[in-house]
Image 1 (tube, rainbow, N blue to C red):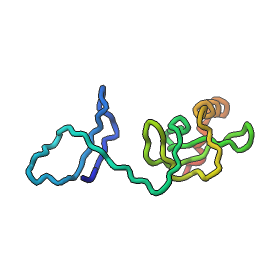
Image 2 (cartoon, one colour):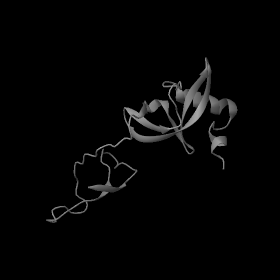
Image 3 (tube, rainbow, N blue to C red):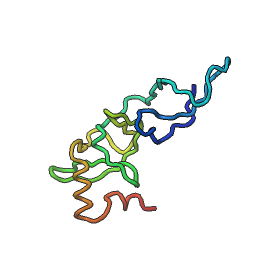
Image 4 (cartoon, rainbow, N blue to C red):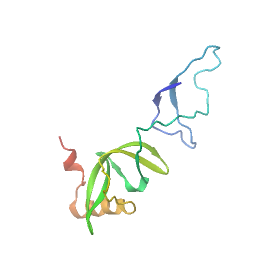
Length: 128
């Protein structure tokens, strides 16, 4: 089976996700719209860096984390995310080994920056 589309919205009041899949159906036993339990194998390219979901800030500019540059000083860093689950988010790029990422309080740093500076910390980085 090959998943060709994943609906980005959950069904209201449920934990169902609609997908479109291409799969063999030689006996015509599967009909469009049927509900099924599907187990999708996760493929990752080697050892992935995983962060807790609370470490990431998502906004219209993408995803970023806060890094501690020196004691008490923090700066935002754009990251590219991969698979997101309730217990962790795969980081595909933007961080390197040894970076000190704020795990708890990232949203507080983001909010304080917005309050004091009056602008999104990542807006300037994303201007083309």
